[in-house]
Image (cartoon, rainbow, N blue to C red; front, side, top):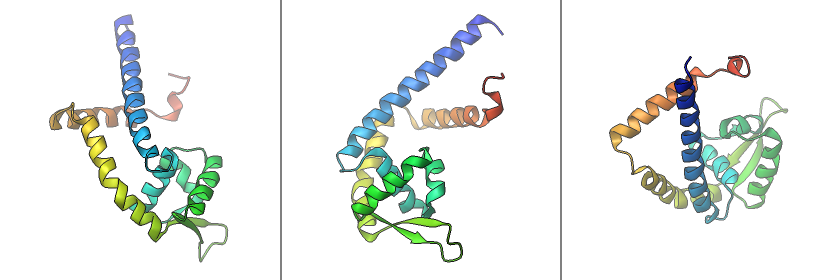
Length: 151
């Protein structure tokens, strides 16, 4: 493996990281104007689009440490945007469920959120977006936990 290839891999990593950070910071600023933080928004969006979720599984679906989920769910419950619901056939499981108020909240802000993300991505053509999606999926799927530290 030549140093040119290694340099290119490092450059790709840096460019992807910087692009992700720029996009994410921009989107997070908009989310905060809605009166929720990005994590609260992610939980509400998950519940709205995927239905009730076991509290224990939310963290993995929105990439958040499980210890933080209780705090986020508490905050959203205080705002009346979600509620906890006991699983009828397993007392150990509690689901987060979006409330009617939470549904109205998401329905009011999501169209602007989608348009904003679309405008951020408008630098790329439809074909370029398709190519980027394919390449990033290929890269992401090729990486497994056994590659950590072991090459």
